[in-house]
Length: 435
Image (tube, rainbow, N blue to C red):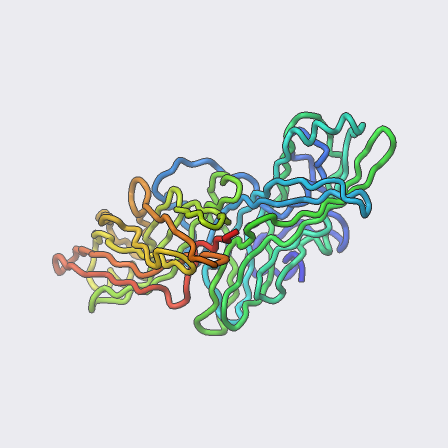
């Protein structure tokens, strides 16, 4: 399996083709440089920085499609730098990654990690070593960039296996940070993977390896950088369930407007599919989105809470049409319950709606979906969560939700309680490693 290109689904954007095995040459889109320029290319499969936003309620334009998980994480990695077989030193840094994945999978379903890209910044102290070694420039070739989907088939795909990335003539400027982002055109997708019949699938950063040629006063010097995750590596865990034979999970054009997270932190939004009963009136399919920041890993004995947590109610066009068909013209109400379910920690159930949240009156328009931020201003409180003794990871998923609705229409005012049971196939927000 390899970086998905020639057989991508219809209507997707193609990358520029090149003969198999020919390295991709990257233009010089970086800030002033350093000794570790080759190592920066190592993490070429990940995403460029996104726009900054203050802590606030979810903007409807940032909420992904129902069934999609969008996120950006800053994963600690350790890169062993070798001269031939001889290790020289280990460089500890972070890779900044973002992309889109499904929130659940069906048995045997094909799926991809889409819209993937990223960047890595190397510290100025490292580039300061360049003059002492007489290094003026560097070339680099990324020949292994493996993204994993544990329990899926295959369990990892090296997207550089047949089409390595090449960056030539990287200038060395001592004492300045070096930031490299790839891809330089478009985005990556990794797949197809095939889900197992049951259980879970966990996305992981597996490995990146780059061969670097340093141009010195004494001639070329070849080194290798081998990078792997240095602590929590469960980027996203997805449950498998429901009927077999589902179409491929392949997302395009989802919003990815996340600020850069701190090291060992994730900033993401999931939009979980729910089926809600409006008393005896209709069964409504909706999406409940939850967003916020959380750690990839914590030390044993620590706790964590979501930072800048918020949510949104997504009513798809089909459900809006259902409501119009029974005579509703406007909808309003309050949300009183949204449970998060904790595996491997406490509390086991956390209702993050500590006081009722208003759903403002919204006019229903045929064939137009509705996205309502929850709350309209400010954030939710989620946590703190405490790992259970002896657990190695703590998983938090979405649970039941409840709201009181007021509908206005031709028949007057109708009040109805909306009850949403937890999703039939679990939807996971967090898979935090306990170190």
